Length: 115
Length: 110
Picture 1: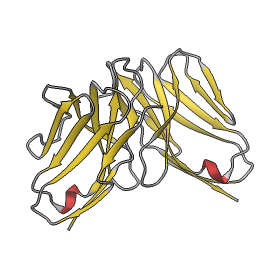
Picture 2 (picture 1 turned 135 degrees about the horizontal axis):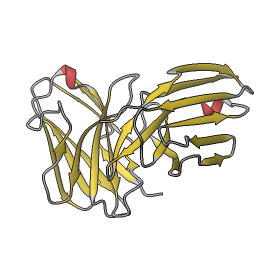
Picture 3 (picture 1 turned 90 degrees about the horizontal axis):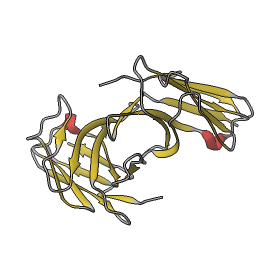
């Protein structure tokens, strides 16, 4: 199957700082990338959908000014958590889908801890 | 957004036993997927079911999509410790959007 990577795998930052998480599709062109958040012992919640070259579509309740998403190329999307707070600590997972659509390929996730 | 209810949410059984996990919705999905997630990793796709009444087998795992495409089940035969993990069902809403169930945390004890 297709491979999606995320960097970093773990990050610890201080409250008030910003953190950028990268999501890359390594062997295919991802027209659409998705960002999810998963709190401990819970399921994945979709935060936003991004299409290459256009603005991301955010799910209800997700602050677009706090979670900045950029999808500048067909292989890279970034999620920046701005002015992070301890409640933003979570497991952030991206997925990528090609033109064919049905299947999303998930990255390994990024564990964010805000102290 | 459509909702998916998974049951049970937690299941702990002995090696060799059989089990079934259910995924139910009041809404119709065009297709439904099952994933397995290990701690600290992203989910891995196990199967996609598309047609109402469809049954797919993956070794000891049997997946079924309800006739009305509102529900699905995952049956594991002769469970092994390696089957331990979080099992997630996800319905496809619209073109590509996935709606995940709450997950079933499965523990198989040796």
